[in-house]
Structure formats: structure tokens, C-alpha cells
Length: 184
Image (cartoon, rainbow, N blue to C red; front, side):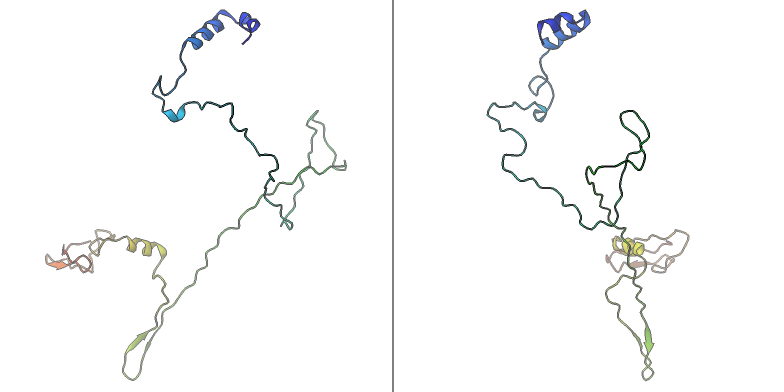
């Protein structure tokens, strides 16, 4: 700040300037600021920023076959606000592209397992399913998070088929623990 600028300052501005100059700069040594917030000192021999001489720039290539081309033509003058007629000649300035990804559409394949009863021996033969999940994805997700068969997500008003409602005790088939028979 030059002498003339200091003379033009009001009394309040001069007082604020003096107080600011007397106050030490906040660093990690003079306050509770972490050292990572300290200002980095610029060395005289530091490299200048930006691209170095001879470096070839890289940019995204413009598509040769766009799906749609939209021309953006001004309708008002930015200087005076007057209306620009559509028959006035226009010059090309630049290209900007926006790439939108198409919406992902799920492909649902329903696998129907069929059973056939063999007429000679009467055995019911089931066709194997090719590694697909039964039920809806929600139920598959919920059943994969069950720690054991004792854990139930049914309303408490319905009796459980897995455990009888009598007061007997039965072993849990998954965790081998003793599960009290309860109405789930």
C-alpha cells in the first residue's frame, strides 16, 4: 500500500489496518489450526505451473456421427437487446457435445420348472433349474440375510409351521440350538 493510499483511508479504516498488522498471522504455531492448513511458501526456484513447452495437449474427440445436431442461434443482441432476424448470416463458433447413456432396461427370463410322473414306477421327476433364484429378488435378498431358521419375519398373529405352537422344545436345524416353540 502506497503512502497516498494510506492518507486517503478514513480513521476507522486506518484503525482496522493497524490492528490487522499488529495481529500475528494464524498458523499452526500461533493457533489451533492443523499444519495442513498453513500457507505453502513459494520458493524462488519453484517450477511455473501449466503445460511445458513442446507438450501436445489432449482432449476428447468429437463424434463423427452424432445422433442429433441442434443449432443454438441467438435471438437477441447481447449489446442492445434488439431482436435478431432468423435470415441474418451466422458464423460457426464452437462445438459442445453432451453424451447421454441410455436407460438400463432389465431382461427378465422366467424359468418354469416342470414335473412329470413316470407311469411305470409312479415317481415324480423334476427338471433341474439352471442356477436361478426362486421367488422375487426381494425374498431372495431377505432370505440370504437370515442368520438361522429361528429368525422369522412373519406377523406375530400367524402360527409358525416350522415350530409347533405347543410348549415343546425342538432343535433348530441351522444353528443346532434349542429353539422354543413359539407362535411367530
